[in-house]
Image 1 (tube, rainbow, N blue to C red):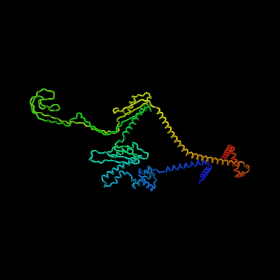
Image 2 (image 1 turned 90 degrees about the vertical axis):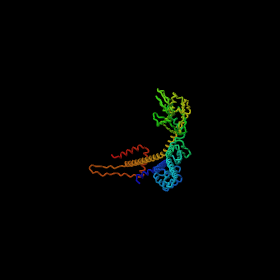
Image 3 (image 1 turned 180 degrees about the vertical axis):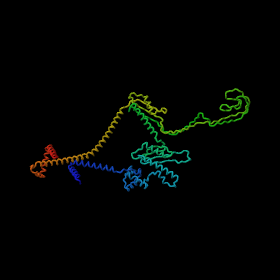
Image 4 (image 1 turned 180 degrees about the horizontal axis):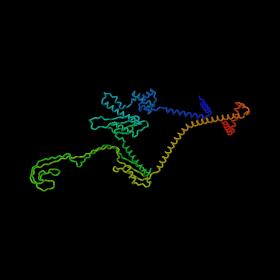
Length: 548
């Protein structure tokens, strides 16, 4: 072992031996916490990242897959109530291929893969049923891919196409959803499932899809539009209108000085209305025209209008000698025989407009808005408030909508109590946050304080030990110097005429061990009695020892 390392280890061992029981306890706790922290960090860093191998497994399939993973020596973790198996990312695809080769999971819905198993001898009924099952499986797999959905099952009712039915029945679908623990599907997710299912089947509308969860709750009922039932639509509409009016009044009269209540009647009836309108185009010629003369006649005459069978208004034949127009000059003579009638038929062009209107459920039939304003607010104009509320709420008087605004005195006791309650809740929340921060800080301090104290004590011990060694060395040198200075030396005579004689030195007597200990004790006593003087002597000796 190198000398510097051996010296450090000896000093560390010596320092630890000089620790008190309390110091050793703190040092051991600090070292233990440090080792545990390093071990936990190493475990977290080296832990493999797990990914789901399969989800929604049955008990039999999960058991078979676990046995396969144990045989392959692959680390796994079972979650989701036993239906999900997690494996390291680098082993996901290899294990999936092995599971597929073994026909796992066997409880899979199949999807379009069912069509690959049909033989050439399958009947038309088998083909139709298999095709329907394939669509159901594909829809179920797609819905299961949504976040929060554990399992899904889709049942389709598709009517058979036939030419012997005058009216075709629309297809319907029912979807069963089982969510993960603690997960509830919101309205947007339910609408997504309904739209996904209805768009996958030809001729299916969103109102033909029903969605039910594992708790037996109807999330979307058949025959109801995807927007929801009438009561839910009315509630949503009331909340939206109330929010708009309340936000406007808060700006006008100030927050807390007005309250708004909206009541809306929503029609739950739906249907279709067909209307046909006929009109005559202006200036259009007749499509066809025909005339027919029935009967015969003989006679003679002269003058204007003297001929038999004179045509009257609208080309209608009149008897001879009779006119429906104003009299004219001239005479008519002769005899008249049997007369007939002439009929003219015209076919005129007519415009025809056919309108088909679909009436959805959820239309607003009537709404009322009630507003109470604090009369303590000065300068309130009731007429202006009514106009503002009418515009903000979209009031339509033709359907019977009404607005009522009253200036009343508000009860401030409840507001004060509510303000105090809110302040108390905020204070409690703030206290909880502060307590949490304090707990975190105390925990961190409890972990870090022993380590800091141990490091400080070790550093201080090393520093004290080094200082003691330096002082002991300096005092030893001081004692040796004093011993050397107390000895006498022989003078050396130098003559100019004679060559220089050889220098002679007086040998310093060796310091016995007993003398060393005695002198060290004297130096220690001097240092303890007068430390300033001792320090000055040491500084002087060190300056004298410096080379000129």
